[in-house]
Length: 304
Image 1 (cartoon, rainbow, N blue to C red):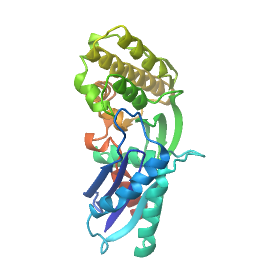
Image 2 (tube, rainbow, N blue to C red):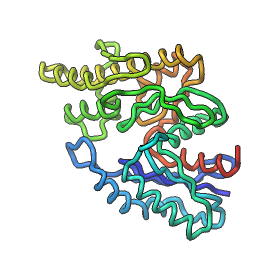
Image 3 (cartoon, one colour):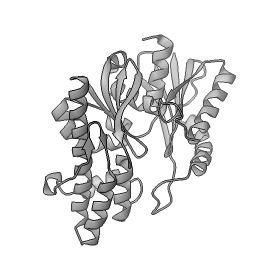
């Protein structure tokens, strides 16, 4: 049997299919375009883009009607009360439509739970979904630190202002890079040890707005773009490192999982993977996708 996942986050329209044995059968995605020089997109524009993208994305998974067991969809950003973004309504509408016509159940999960599932499943650590671990979700819309216990997610820390991905994108746009800026910032970056990073961490919480302000000041003073890029990425790295250290001190030496687009950065991945034996999402599944939602659907139906 096959399990369909649908995800309509701010910047990507996604559908994916996994089989009973956990094989990824299909993975179809289309980006939501952001105007040149822009630093984001309005929710109304994101909803419209998903509605336009969904037919092509769904066509990209092929005909699975004869083997479809269930449909899963991301309905909200996070597993907390009041978490809501209109862009997810597009995916929910598509998923419930498939459910109604196919006569198959439709299960709802948070976008964040999907990222966590994508991280552990694509890393070959699916057994963690039935255990307790520390998880980071680091992206343009989220910089959260969580305690995950058999997929019950408790927020235990995170940013108090800017998200890490926001800071990276704002600095990148400042340097003339195209949004989203993570990959390009990494390409132009000098070695991280060539600059002194900054961090503002208290316990398991952080502030990242100072990073953007410092980068803007560096640019005004004529600092080379590659050094500003290294400062930005290095500052995100030391921030996540200190938060992780403090979380382990407070909650014990648990497995650590990093998910979200920012964690695809090679400097961040290499350093934290080495220090904590941390589990990172396979690079192609760190950015927004529906694979994790498909895995969660499979897990719920099979009861594994």
